[in-house]
Image (cartoon, rainbow, N blue to C red):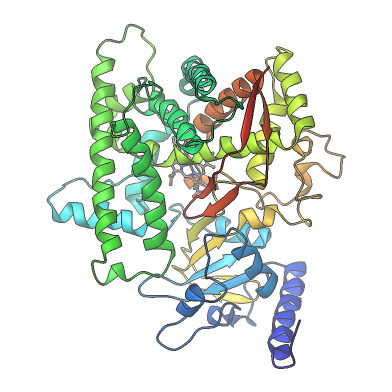
Length: 502
Ligand code: HEM
């Protein structure tokens, strides 16, 4: 309810929304003379010295792990929201308007900058160099400018070549089938896998990406795999990295000024991730020596460039390719479990033996729309740009709220429902996905900087989901799972899946 004291504020917000609608209707982000400075963009109130900090403690930004927080900001402030600079963490603008997202993304120069993971960047670029590490390259996730471009152009022909990716079809299917055997053995008397289902999905994802990054089977599914095995340590380490990066890089933190305990823990974690990656890469290189066929996979081709490129790319793949794929498959399973008619339809497609499986792709796309592992993407502007009546300066961080936009009725009719058909229906159908703005749903990012692992991830997920649905009738009991938002969106237990044999 609006109190009389608050009414002026609500009126301002309403005015702001009205202005935004008008500007959007004409031209979303054309440069005009009548623009306001970015500091006037609506957002949580700022106090002297502490800025917006109090909102993280008791206000509208507290409980940021809740995925609804950003949708609430949209409802309160409209399609553009301001976050002020805080303790060295740069100011940030959140955008919920697809044409404006398009404009920011299309205005990038040839060297797009995706900020985030500043603490990891600090570890790889500053701390390691202080310790005498000589390399200029930190990796695709963390480098920018010419260093990023040079590395990306070196690895693109290897990582994006469909012929190379196709080489992994059979080994990924082998991984999927081994995982099915493991899941069957893990089920309890109720056909449930309640204990550590998330770790199980991570084991599948690590085993899968390992075949590409390290050219060998890691054997993560061994029943006798101890908890302190390098495989389990790596899984835990990747998970902890994303969570701690969220504490340091996406929330207010003093680490840029003093070495806080969280900062020290993060630096130890980053070092641990590095030594584990080296351990696995060494294992991959050893196994290559016994290889009998002549087909060259990703690791061999990268090693031909040089060992450092192979190591850095493997490290990127192990960082970016485990939790992402694992949580996406969990989301697909959950949504198919609570939509049994869609699951039956998918199973019929899979059992038909047809080589083309459009409904499988559609089910995965629709799951990513409703429960994406990444809430949105980010860029640092490379030039000044006017958006929705505000002037955004160069070097400003802009976040695209793709998850929230994808849940809005105005972009996807019956937005809260699981309707894979929207991805395969005729163009003339009002439900056809093509009717929405292409910058609403962008799960793998945009342009030259987009996800280099997309084709690999899609192949892994298609293969595994197909095997799961062929083998199990998947059900879910009880309330929906909780999703916790850190740098990634993690689906949390209890995992009430029931896996009945087909
Ligand atoms: C469901 C699975 C995945 C999703 C949703 C996903 C999503 C994304 C997104 C949104 C970006 C940022 C793109 C941009 O800035 O425009 C990205 C970047 C990246 N992803 Fe993925 N990803 C997935 C799986 C993978 C896998 C399996 C790998 C490993 C090969 C991988 C490796 C990378 C790398 C290295 C980058 C940085 C690219 C660059 O900046 O040049 N991702 N991913």
